[in-house]
Image 1: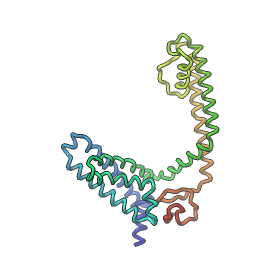
Image 2 (image 1 turned 180 degrees about the vertical axis):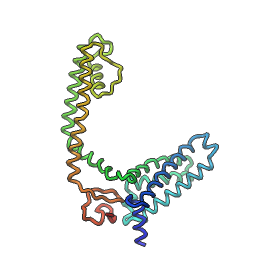
Image 3 (image 1 turned 45 degrees about the vertical axis):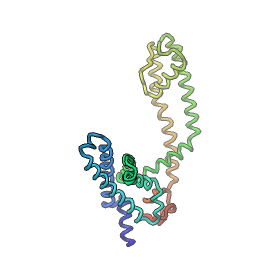
Image 4 (image 1 turned 90 degrees about the vertical axis):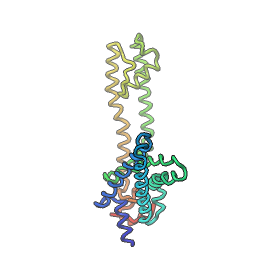
Length: 267
């Protein structure tokens, strides 16, 4: 029995086997189809013509997802590690609306929350290892916050100075009627958004605008470099082994079980 549970676990939670990849691909397509069913059912025209078909399809998908949910609980060592995880909560919320609709009609529309389950596509595409970069990003932003504050203060000074300067240059321009509006133009130009609602009319002003645009491309790269360097520094100190059940990263390379949920680690 333990071998069967381990096999189910590898198929459902893993993506390194052919069966595991096929399971996740089928699951994602089922999720997408079930969302389409819910969306079509909310359109009166389709509901009137194909109401019975859509109702049957919705229950078929719900039963499928329910079976999958309980299989996930069955095959892992510590069920609570999945039940209370992000995906566990989403999986539960994906099936419960249909059952609640039997008691409270109308709640089945909340089944569209299944769209969040498509996040499992990261596992199929073998990108789950990069999902941990969100954690790196948070740590990197925290570590580089002072540098970012200084950078933002520097940019604020630039737009104030350039905006005031353009107000003096474009004094007769109906768009630059005040320093705040000129600062707004400087921000839009520096960030290369370029709404075009305010434009310089003088040759000198257009020259300054061109310089600000070029400067904007240089400035945009600065915070990216600051955060990226911190991410690389943090990533070098982080172990790559992780649990496929709770997705905890940073586990020791020689660990056999997850320190978070107790699940057996698969090499």
